[in-house]
Image (cartoon, rainbow, N blue to C red; front, side, top):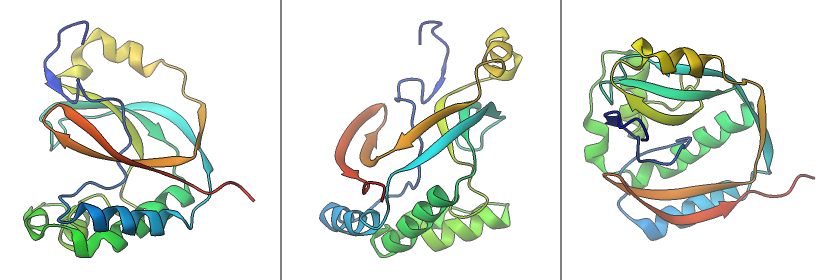
Length: 176
């Protein structure tokens, strides 16, 4: 923002998207997610590298992110959420087509192309055109890469352009 670069997600808070779709009924969304998430306890994640999705299909830029080390609990939460929300996903969300079979299959089934083992859990920072050609890319790649965090809640957001509205926050159970 300070450098006034053009890109997408620059005004979005850094975030990790578990599932993204157009949902028809918000009340049912909350009920389904509360029931789904009630079965999960808090867990730890580790940021293990900085990286970039070069020429991101969705942003036409280089999406800058912090990689979350693959984590069985996170993958399981994503899969459960996607499966349980399938009936609420707007059918138009499922009409996107991808050349990649994994993305296409996931999109048709869930309305989101990144459900399953091909999902790369990460925190999106922003997407900048030609970021990998900038000096900041070299600096970003050298950042500390072993950060740990306790995940104790999941939040639901409505995003309209650059406006973010937190609809609900659902706490995970305590460790046993």
